[in-house]
Image (cartoon, rainbow, N blue to C red):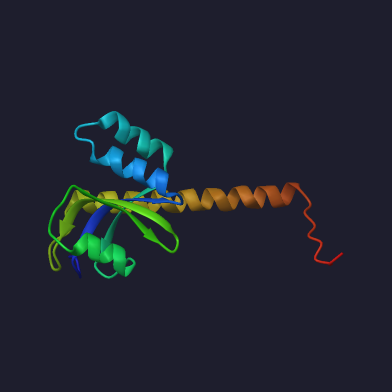
Length: 139
């Protein structure tokens, strides 16, 4: 069961306003699967389920201010960059988690964990093959 009101979102995090505007515009185009596929391939996107109160207040209020699904939020500027979010689905507190949703969530968590481990393995491999010296003395 969902403990709190939740939403499944597709979250793009971008550093520049122009790219954020491009992504938001492409997502808002009706039935344009080619642009959507390009966005998913070319930009870092996170598909996840978030609980109410989990994100920044500004993003949280945008996501949970109504009960709509399949709508685009953003770009929203925060201190960390720009966010573009598509709300894919909503879940009320106390509702049952669908088996397909549970599978998707588990798959996403495992995928993200594997991606993080790949980065760690790469860094360890580089450390083992190359000697790196950091000179902290001031000239």
